[in-house]
Length: 366
Image 1 (tube, rainbow, N blue to C red):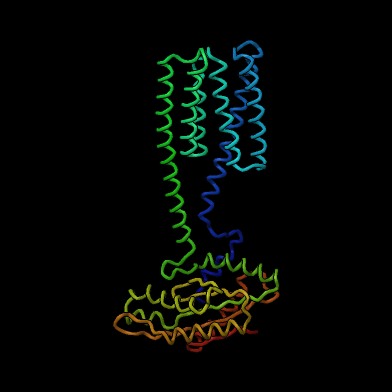
Image 2 (cartoon, rainbow, N blue to C red):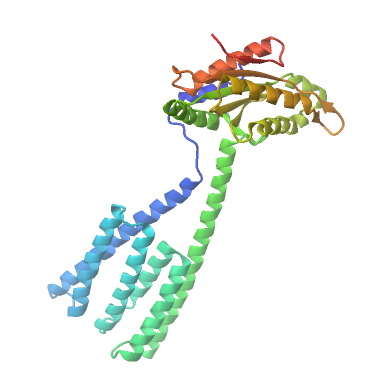
């Protein structure tokens, strides 16, 4: 029995295929959670400032106080609809960031005695870069500079010329710094995504033949079995063994292992026409899942694969090496609840084919 690795994977019912897209999903969940918390913080803080003004402990003025209450209420509404996933993260950002910008403008205009009122522009820029990226950050920076210039020109009791220049220089400097940070983080995220793809490939493909490994094949087989039983469809499996492979390696050297396996896999794939999935489950054994194949069509395919491998000799460049296959076949039964059941029967048929000297195709039968 050569495919213990395949059958052993069935002991883990929670096994699932890894997915590089999960990295993006995780990042999206992180940003959504971050925005929810930012909305809660900004809504709470603006409400506190408004209440302090009502109590006479902080002088905002009527306009700013009323705006703070409205801003706080809007933030909590956004918080609720985003938390309940009524709107997407992007939509929430489109609503939240312009509201923050308006709040900055109102603060600069309506609270002229507050020398630190421009700080809200800096905070909003930080939100823009952190949540929506470089383009949103640039747009908000330019909008802030233009807005401050218009206020400085048409509204009295704003900043002195020195303060105005200092604020704008600081905005530009902070924007460039945040831009560099955001770009570096995005570059890092892309590298992680690339590494995730590579790990996904290595975790789910055999490096020599580029077919599914036994772990991934089991997960796929489990899914195909459930689908076949649900839709009352056929499902078959081939266990394919390359005869006398160890003898071939002893005679021609182990360096031919990779091209030889790739040669066999290519020939099998050519017969499948994308209607089956191949897994390499041991050093010289493959397993093929065949959705919608009954025993007759599975046996016909097995014959085609065997004939193709015998007709297309493997070439080392100097010599041509004949290859033969032993193949065991099994099909889905009504009593099968696990892909392991089909695989065990196919492997028993394969064991009998090998015991008869190889180069045989046998179907499991009771």
